[in-house]
Amino acid sequence: MTRHRGTTAEAAHDKAVAEARDEIVRVGTSLFARGYVHASAGNISAKVGDSHLITPTDAALGFLEPGRLALVDARGEQIAGDRASKTLTLHRRICAADPAARFVVHTHSTHLVALTLAGVWSADDVLPPITPYYVMKVGHVPLIPYHRPGDPRVADLVTAEIADQAASRTPIRAVLLDRLGPVVWGPDAATALAVLEELEETARLWLLTDRRPEPLPHHALDELRSTFDAAW
Image (tube, rainbow, N blue to C red; front, side, top):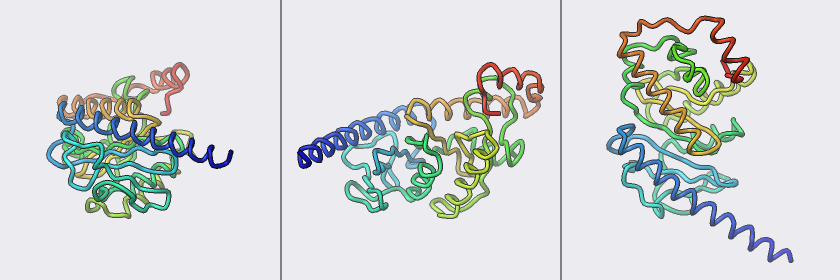
């Protein structure tokens, strides 16, 4: 009986990994087709049980192959696929810091990178709360100071922000890496993508209006908190 349960669990895990491979490819194709990623910039990962699937280093997200995605075990050791993205540590640390994080996306989205070059609203909130859906779907997004791509110190900074915001009862779903773009996460691909899309669109709106719009007034933010449980 024990052997049968083990075999069943392994089969279920293999099936979940296969489904996650297909989901990562689907998301990569969609991001590329809509201009959220270009060339080999960006990476995507999914947590499956204690394992992680992540796009390979220097992979073009619009042309991913399921079998070439890197599979990493609970110890962080790669067991299948091409060499894992250099941001693997960051992805794994986000999932460890936030139990709700099972799908992580990092892009070099044009308007969000431009925002870091033009100047963010503040280090604690890269954009002001100018629309209700930004408040409800995205929430607070801190700026992470520039470090080279793949620098492990970034993981320390991001997980510290996750812990600080959780302690303040305003859990975050994203951060913005200076000159490198957003990292977003959620329990599944659809949730993570919704955050990314609303975040990039709000950056585009704010830049298009020369960063002039005022934030929503306090009473409007209070209403969004009480009506929709917005984490702001």
